[in-house]
Image (cartoon, rainbow, N blue to C red; front, side, top):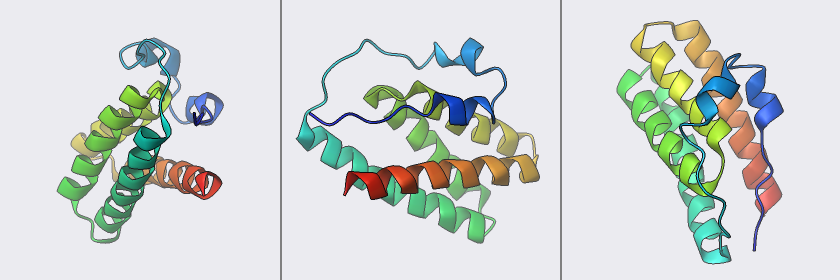
Length: 120
């Protein structure tokens, strides 16, 4: 079984009200088999690429769709703090706050790339 390191401290610095919001994404703990983890890592890599492409092209819909998919996927795999971070990207994007949105996206991309590198 593969264990994914949590990123609570990293996200806490980006989303001050993390503790109040994290509960909406927490699920009952379960063991994740290697096949599911492989699928998770593959999809995470694709979504991070899409998120970066959306940022590079200033494509709000691509950014939103990528963040939205990561929000659900990370919550279901046991990373509710990353779901909150992705939700915050959606909120800042919706509100037209592009500088905070870009900063949050950069943090999410950096986290994902670190995780993907460690998983190999």
